[in-house]
Image 1 (tube, rainbow, N blue to C red):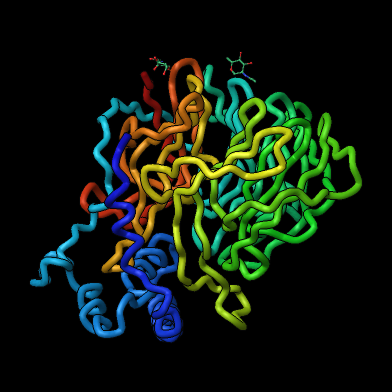
Image 2: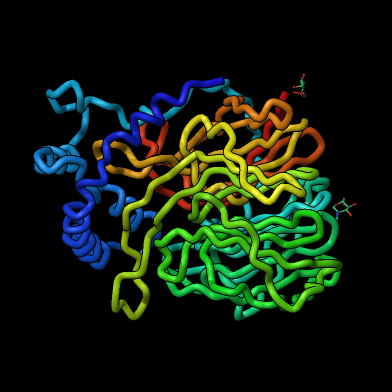
Length: 425
Ligand SMILES: *[C@@H]1O[C@H](CO)[C@@H](O)[C@H](O)[C@H]1NC(C)=O
Ligand SMILES: *[C@@H]1O[C@H](CO)[C@@H](O)[C@H](O)[C@H]1NC(C)=O
């Protein structure tokens, strides 16, 4: 086990009592971003790097000016020892692994989704840039080790923040999500893909639209829970399910289930035998600037967490398990089930407590299904969020997402399509 003390340190900098002040600060800063964004290039990475260079939450009123100064400069130059906290403080010690780079995906993508069925990986949608979203699926064949196909998604389907699950053999269920670029409005429209015929069919729409809800097929039912509500920011705790079979909903409407104790988007959701797990995630997300005709994204307060919830078949309640070694979000496609464990690659963690910059995650976490405990089992070639993980023939693979700026700078930068693999164990 690895201590989570550094993660805990990241949480203590923020006090609820300063929320009002923070909101005031937010308004001011949101307009600064808009100005900078308008005067910069239109690539996603430059938007996010601008966004992550600013302070969004002010931890203590009296430190306001000081912290803004730090944000504009380097933390290391500050004389107050309490404030000397390296940008990489959240990295946990982890074994090095030998990585092999494989052919990159045809397009880079952020906030896409992936499903593996046998020796094929299906990679869905995602942002290419903040102003451009993909509306197709790319296919990778692990036996041939090449990208081998592509087909379109339905016009009415979301392009990011989808809830995605498979029966493991032939059908992929795609629930709700965000159509279009920037921070657009969500849809409740839901679909099913038959991978044999590449034909799409529709499912009953979710009772309310959600961004990046935790989604999984468990005991013949498609479960959807959490995510963000219609404004993209407010965490939802609702949990619905519908019976599905052979690519069809066999009920007319979604059923209400036990709400998840903590809401929010970008979590891993995994079913193993009689257990359903929901892991990590966040409360809050970027949301559309009020009145913006293009739903221009603006950063809002986010709290990333490492909570783990489990439901056992027949028990109508959520059990709280040991949290991840550190808070982790943007991991909905970043997991595999391997050797009686869940393995999660990369993500985003809590923002830097002083600079408020976004921090990416470069570790591989393993959750042991026998002991229900976590360990850190390796490092990715770089820190990266919204990875898509898969496993074939002894190799674990990850592709896509948004990577860091370099070994010493865990802030998000380039959106990638790279594909890498390594052997575990
Ligand atoms: C992947 O490629 C292998 C080797 O060409 C082929 O035998 C296999 O059928 C392909 N997989 C699928 C599902 O098409
Ligand atoms: C699989 O897990 C078992 C039990 O934890 C362990 O002894 C074994 O070494 C693992 N296998 C690999 C390939 O790591």
